[in-house]
Image (tube, rainbow, N blue to C red):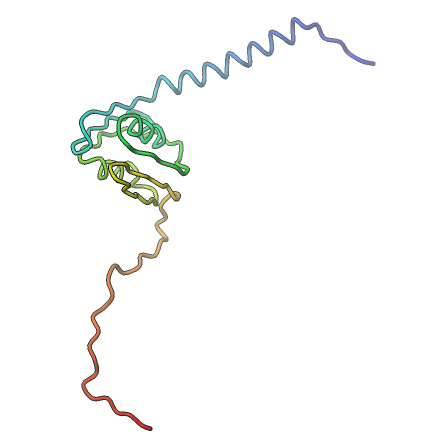
Length: 138
């Protein structure tokens, strides 16, 4: 036996679900805030419960900055100050990333979350000296 429900009850259910989803999205959007001030040499970013992606997007709207890669959805509440490149580095403190300068543009590639298990390679090679006495056996 097939049960036929009135369209009115289906429509009201769909409207209720849509209202709940919209309210959740609006609440999250109202909570997050990013303010960017200054020039590239002296930037001030004020973030209140904003994701790293929202902060990078705000910097990209104001400066010649592009980013790609995944960042987490945790909210950040902080103030960052300094040259643009340093501010980006502080925003991405919990991530592995690469910053490439292309003229006056910054290209930021987020590789993923930083790990405490990462092994750091030495930044320099140890000094080597030639041997004083070389003995050859032919």
